[in-house]
Amino acid sequence: MLSVEQIELFKAFAIIFGLAVAGYGYVKGQLKQRRAKSKKLLTFFNDKISSADIQLWSKIVQASTEASGAKTGMYITAQKKHVKLMSLFDDKATDQGATAKITQEIEFLCSQVLTDSYDLPTIALEIGQLMTVIYDWFKDENTFIENYPNFVKVMSEKEISRFPFKTLVSTD
Image 1: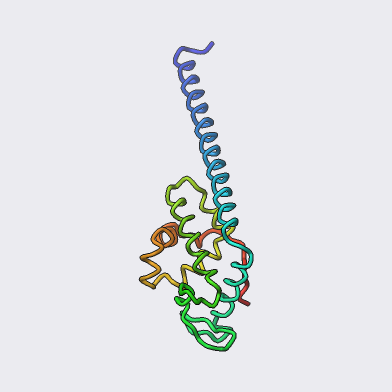
Image 2: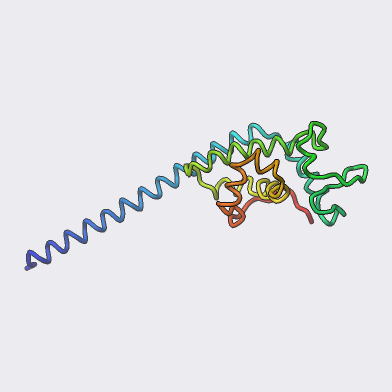
């Protein structure tokens, strides 16, 4: 026969176990919601950015590598001219404004990410390369820092590079 103390101890363990299971379920449910919200946010992003924008950006990525002969902070045009990457934010940008448009949409996306209601690994998986490359290009430019504060904050504080992401463009 169990003593009153043993029964009370059993009840306490049952309550603790129940709370642990409930807490685990709550955390998993929250993660599922954050992932679903992130996928909706990415759908919104993809609706704003065309495949042509990604292709134009990809050409700039390839033209800005050491292998192409580009100097740091520059890319090489079809006419073999070295051009500063910051010129991609000018009205007559070589990529027809694709990089500026992508950066603007990433800024909006990052403003949402900073609410902590979204799953950063889900977002990084889809557009991590876009975010990382653009941030690496412009992170030391005051104009970029001033105009895209949410983007800068996510990239500097959230360490997005630690997450895996799809390769949109190869620089090999």
